[in-house]
Image 1 (tube, rainbow, N blue to C red):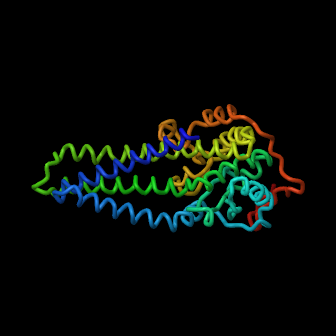
Image 2: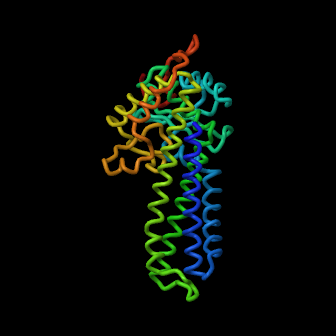
Image 3: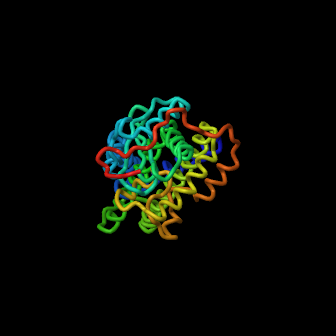
Length: 310
């Protein structure tokens, strides 16, 4: 637990340091002052983060065709979430359904008041109540730790580094350097090419770190790590069999497992740790009890107008 927090803090420190270096090099090369480029970098990052802070959850729901539903429209999902939320010290978040048979789930929203837990129709059909509770505990752990906000910050800083690097490359190509600059243009170009790659790798490492932490926090709070372990086994097979056909690959890190079919090369840059590692970690955790829904737990009913039969 402490190790995961320290690892995440170190990764954030690295990506921010990279951001400062690239911004400073840009300022030194174009304006002859380290501070000038850093101010441009800070402005870009602030603008991106503000937009993401207020609108990221809406974009994620829209990009994944998710629809906010009432508890009456998704009674089984609502019942389990309402049971689990107090265990995390949370008010039950809003619910959304993604109309696809790809079995998956994600959480979005910058804080508890704006949180949304989304489940696909496929996951509601595939998992039993115990397994679904494991998945939803994982998503509530993301909400509790504000992981969506953290990942949005990491993504926007990585994006700002990419934009700065492109600015450096175009400035070098079209003679935009300042005569007072002490930066070797070749060194600068190498930095401009490698910095976005390094930023992306750091962003992916942060994403994997937060997934492992959400597994741990969710399973420990639920007290039933085997529930999530079994769910992950089913979800890995289910998503390979029915990968997500629509939506934005940029939001793949939000899902509990990668919903898109990936090549072996793409797996090298995965936003998620290997399923085998996640399952092994879960099965090494102590078990407090086996989750069972309270008496009167509703069976899954399809959302209105979805056209899906259980």
